[in-house]
Image (cartoon, rainbow, N blue to C red; front, side, top):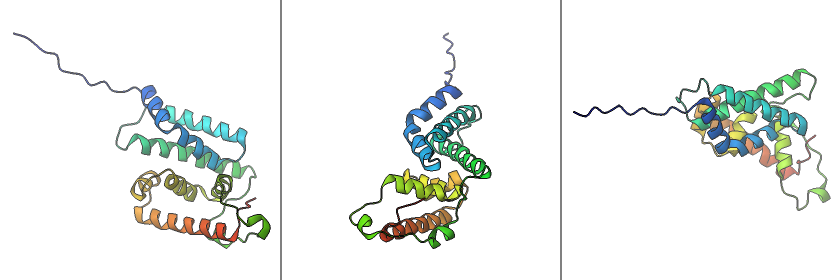
Length: 183
């Protein structure tokens, strides 16, 4: 009589999960850090904080959400904390969508003629947003759908859709006005 051993499933270690997450989403984490922090030195510190928090987080990852969702949730939480920490230390105040929409930008016709919105302008504008609005837009730019963004942010998909639509309208208005000179 032959006795067979039950097959054991290999559970990936936290280190394996971290390495997989970085391999899959590393470039997106760099873009996320760039959108949250303008200063290159502080941006590198932020990216390091994100990686450390992500590495630690996989010790408790239980697979109830996708690794992509988990990775972005951890990264955005760290980045939002980073922004709030620096804001308390005297950095520029963040603005709400209402305030951003109401801002007027000086337009220099010669300079605006023929120019397109570039990444630096977009990142500078996004850095002005409060962390939740910034998170929504960054996830949208990374290709997340409203339901996935809602899963990461804790908002309903309808609320996500409304906020993203509003942010896109503001960005579009600023671009038409030639207001891509953000301080």
